Image (tube, rainbow, N blue to C red; front, top):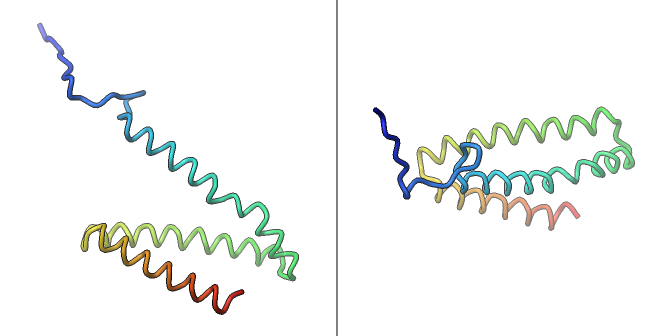
Amino acid sequence: MNNITISKDSPKTWMGIPKIIFIALIAIFIFMTGDGIEQAFLSKNIVDIGFSGGQASLVFTVYGVMVVVGSWLAAVLSDVYGPRKIMALGTIIWLIFHVLFLVFGI
């Protein structure tokens, strides 16, 4: 006969998903909900300043493609150089472009 024992060290799960992963998925869901909220009003603003609806949709399409490419590239570079270095590099690049936007874009 097979006796199945469950170790007390095993992580708690919900529907087969470890609790910590489930909490992380909820956090990502909340972040992505807030992250995409600007698309509701930004496309109208782009059209209001004189661009066509097609040009406004192109902005969001290019954004989506760049997110996919950037995510893949960040994953590959993290595997090669380590996540800490790539996160630091990403933060530096983000700061540079935001300073440039604040100086020249506004």
